[in-house]
Length: 178
Image 1: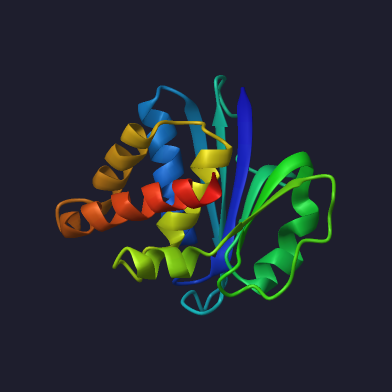
Image 2: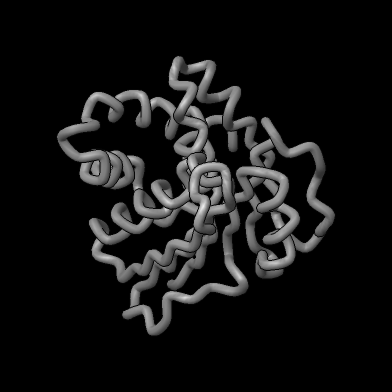
């Protein structure tokens, strides 16, 4: 089994962070992973994306051109990466702020109202984790328990107070994608 992911959005939307969450959760499952960030010099407000590879075998290269799963958190990311979803793959679109539909019909498209989901659970900064929940629902490469543990590890002691809100966002995103 090998699954490739690209998480893309503006700097500050937490795309690199949810990529880390995915990589850590799968690593906790005993899978081989790679996480490769890419961002412009302006970071917050500029474009940011990361590639994650999850595999049962060692990962030879962290580079991902065509991905099984792509998350587009904003319109520029959708415009840039829609063509990079493998045929039969999954494209998860943040319908809260993206004003167009996908044009491809050879992929599964999931419209996730991530910002509204985050607001509804009282965690307005949790849109990234809500969309991660939608990904996990459609491509279950790890468990909710492992993902929650990965979030706990990545947040660390200093940000432990955000764990419960992120877990709620993850579950709400999964439920919305059902």
